[in-house]
Amino acid sequence: MRAALVTGAARGLGRAMAADLARDHLVAVTYNTTEPGPLLAEHPGIFAVRADLSEPVVAQSVIDQVIDRFGRLDVLVNNAGVIRPDPGADDGLAGLREIFDVNVLAPMALLQAALPHLKPGASVVSISSTNAVLPARGASGYSASKAALNTWTRAMAKELGPRGIRVNAVAPGATERPESPRPDDLVQVFVEMTALGRIGQPEDIAAAVRFLASDPAGFITGEVLNVNGGYRL
Image: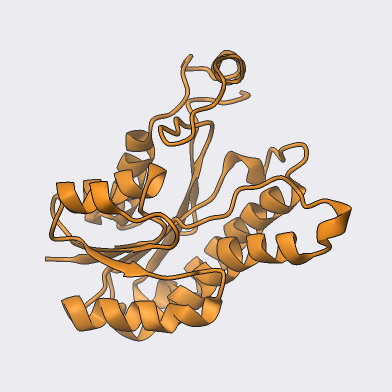
């Protein structure tokens, strides 16, 4: 059975991805401040690792624990991310640094640590955002971090293609967040700007991740797959 690691999987998109992959994969997840209790209750076979990915040096420990547990790693899903408005003047660069540490440097560090264990056919899927190409007002740091993640995805696809390792990303649009729901009027704005007339569900994103990690996507690499229902077409 193939083994997958999903970062930031205690809730939201990460939880949906981990639950979906657990149907036919060995699954490890990382979490930080929020315990993944509901996920583990539903899927007791999932291996949970507490890790603060704002410190990229912990990546090696995470990968080591996954290998110790499963003996292999076939799918790396970089989902953990920091979403926040741009820091104010009083915060200096500290807030921006955390955004880039988690959203960009952590995926880089995890892949670097995982590479000795990834064999031909392995897949890396990172979670980007529509904001990488449609920047959000007041969130330039977040938008820029996701744009950087897109470029890194394409660069690593080129680097790792000769080894038979595929690297892709999924860029969600506005997606339901059960743990922190948006105001109804804001949801309606997103709905009116989306061709399919609804916002996304975590399961929509999980399905895209499953596809990109699967053998039927074996000739797809270096792609950023928009999963946004036709947002702002």
